[in-house]
Image: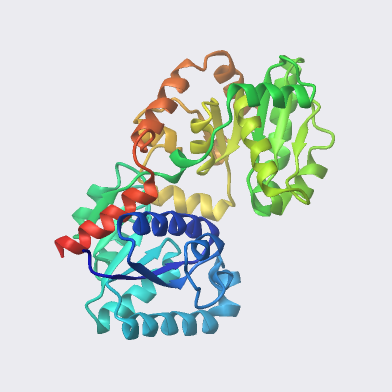
Length: 390
């Protein structure tokens, strides 16, 4: 019979909580006598975690947000490290949130031999390669979401296991649900453009008007084109006001005030119904790939960030579909190229010739683990194998 397993697990934001919940479920499946303590949100708590404090205390981003809470965050870092050292778990698993997680791991490693595992590899393949070497001082093992990440971590001296991306476990709408969405919104068989301008106010502020100009140019050339905009809850009001006068009679999906599950079902159905998408850069490209929706990626930032990141960037594409499939079939309009006329032509080109993207998206999903064991279970097995290997 397997010996009891004591896991200290930490997540600091909703995406990490989701990964943590799936990992905990996987550990319980493989080792039913596992116990947990640590910090997490509703999904980790549903798997049996009694969070030491509310995870939302750690969900801060940027210097302006962190500075007023710096002393409190440092106190939480020290408290958490002390709890790990005192509890003597078999392993401490930190999930993303590196500003918090890696500081905890550093303190733990300075005073104990507890094994440390970090879930979600830093994007050292894109920029700031030195982060891997810094992590290796305090982290024994990394669980990677992308198949090309392990060599970067291993080169720095850490064990790294590719465990699959959570997108492969997400529900995907059927063709019937996509057709029902079209019927419900009186879209018929019109060509349908999905617009995804981002989930943050800053993104909407930078991209909103430009995306509106793109839509106007597209509809001028294709008057039958309709538009659907799944708005993220934090910016739904802004998006609704911004798009009120857009061309293409936009259908805005506002998730506020309704049932969350119903809102997600509607969003997935819209992804399936759309013929082409214009999206801000980010992991949304993988959601679109899962739905087999061809896409164009556009993004811009303030001039200083554009200059700094441009000098540090180590890859020629920021779109995960391009990177995972090792193709460049998804057009990008980043920084200076984020111009409405260029983007509009790119969208129309993809709409007319989507086949190369269909092949690349299918390959991407296979390489991310589609059809195999769920990522949470693969992550659990990797953690246990790491413990056994020592």
